[in-house]
Image (cartoon, rainbow, N blue to C red; front, side):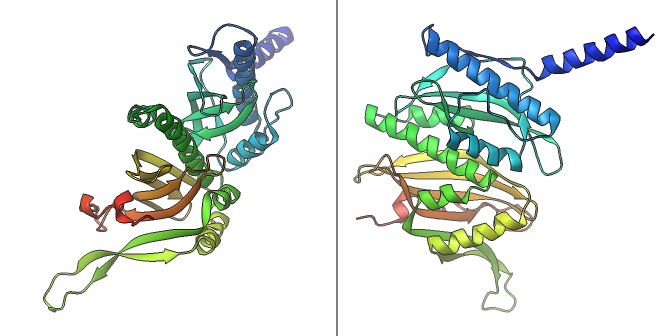
Length: 323
């Protein structure tokens, strides 16, 4: 009887260990050889470590994984706020060459906990340097959005900048999920203009007039915005930002300027909303891109969620006079 129980325990432990193990294989995009083997092995170890840490409710251990200290620290911050796991035993994804001669793997499926402990499907994007060491891990935008933006590129340089933009957009989104104020301090220019809209009810001049809703806007400096955001991070255990749609518009006359408009869903412990975020990005210095303008407008104009903001009112790159 004791042998049967012991065998059952061993079998159960073996099954759990196998369930935690993920085998990743590089698909198209890289020829057979040591680099392909290293990347496949390294990402396998990384995804398996996510599962082991999630199962053991512990912090991540990167001792067996080729990852930069910055990437380890970054994904550790995300992990503390929103732990996740990969439920697939085998993952096969193509690998992309990045604008900085590194490598990128997208669309890695994970299950991430929300504030109620429920599993929410997400996808990771993993960046590596030329030798296959992991340099960055972010929550990916949808594969259909990525393809749409990349297919809009009209020339080699534009395609390079569009890939860079989407990488930074993913970092921007993930920075809210992991409460990374340092990244936001770096990416906003010192003189950045922050505009936030909110819906207010306004009485008409005629007392018999129906209450009308309109959007009023508040301007903030970079310092004011980040100080307010720090307070938001402090009072919320959970923050999730999703981008449901992304549009990238190249400035018609200023090289390196792009307008990025996203439809954003925001959820936190204390508040949630839907709206449009517009960002004016400056990629003239590709090593230090900057956001000069960031705006937010509500998607819904009424409490009953029956009226949405008119397309003509949505802020875009043509809303600003640029020199």
